[in-house]
Length: 300
Image (cartoon, rainbow, N blue to C red; front, side, top):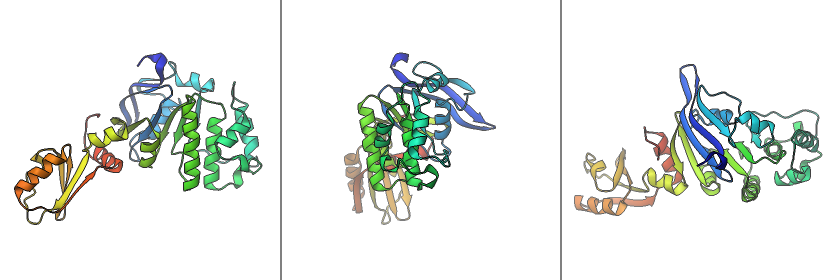
């Protein structure tokens, strides 16, 4: 991917805090117009990655670029909008006043009325920000991220504290922005949201990317099908060596096999004798996430 095509570029980026490498040799390219989900356990390096992208941290090694230049340049030019979890309510101002103030700091802002509509806070325009509920305040943070009409929108846990209806409205707005060519990077703990709304899912663990692709590709990479059955006296040793099996786990008296070729696995199990309680189901994204972040693995 050439520099002119990239909205975001990380090359060999390292960021350490004492002896802890929060980001450890991270390479990442996000094309203009892509919607990318960033997933990882708590402490995996997601927040540090976002802070590096926004120029809030300097990397100890490697380079971070937005639109072919340093993050600070794009941020100053109003090409980046961010919604961070740490933002606090501003006292004694209304939602419209706050959004108007922030929009006025950018060279080519989005019309305030359009911002309020997209963020779902038009009905709150006259309300004081410090008197809003947690969910309402989250939508105001989204409005502030959109105020400058940014080319790149960075969202850290954007639907936290939102109810089901508000989450649906949020993603409807995000789809509209993506369709108009905005680049979107969001972190989330809702794996179904990543699967439903991202072009790509990037999984970070121990400061490194351990998976990068569509939800379907991640499921296949972590073992596309789960085969489970009752051991019923069957010796579990050697299950991982059966055809099509990637990994084998035993929980109590039940075996769980992650398989690339479940048909070959089931045929091999049949040759071992009667198998009780056999279940064959596609791996979910939750299954893939747990598999990818609970073992040492190469990038997939």
